[in-house]
Picture 1 (tube, rainbow, N blue to C red):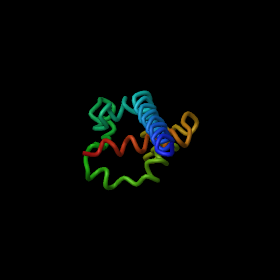
Picture 2: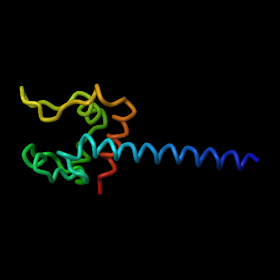
Picture 3: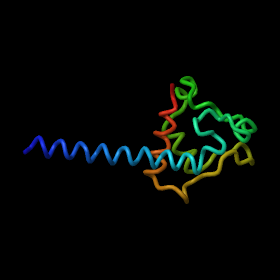
Length: 109
């Protein structure tokens, strides 16, 4: 009986995690892919214009800090007076921001 309960809980947790992954992908496609591309390479018209970094590059991933990524997603990115990326603090919950940061990490090859 205990094994059944443990297995059921494990499946439930796995289901929740996979839903989060699906949600993060949907959030990425809705809010980020226009500039960063569906694959995180930044190989889009806007991505090239803004010289967006390739998130599939291990060196780029190595320089990214989770706290910096979270701050960028929430507050946006500015360069002087120019806004390079708008912030999403009004549109996304903290959990959604964390899910997006984890989604970016998954681009690393």
